[in-house]
Length: 100
Image (cartoon, rainbow, N blue to C red; front, top):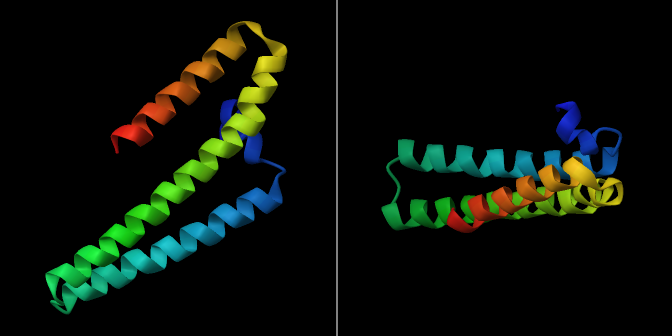
């Protein structure tokens, strides 16, 4: 992670939770790949794609929560340009999530 966004560094519990979630998502995607290779019913594949998408969205929200709770709160305490930058980053991240 970059210094600018390194709040997860040293937060082993959060890192491990995110990695666990990512491994689960990876398994879901491999399952989807297998379904396509085996030419399974399209609706069944789409159902699994939807589940994987929701899992990625949940991960994104968890990461956003971490960012707000740590980076944004710390920047708000410091004020100034860093506060403005972190607020802008958070707003842009939320906008990307809403559009996805």
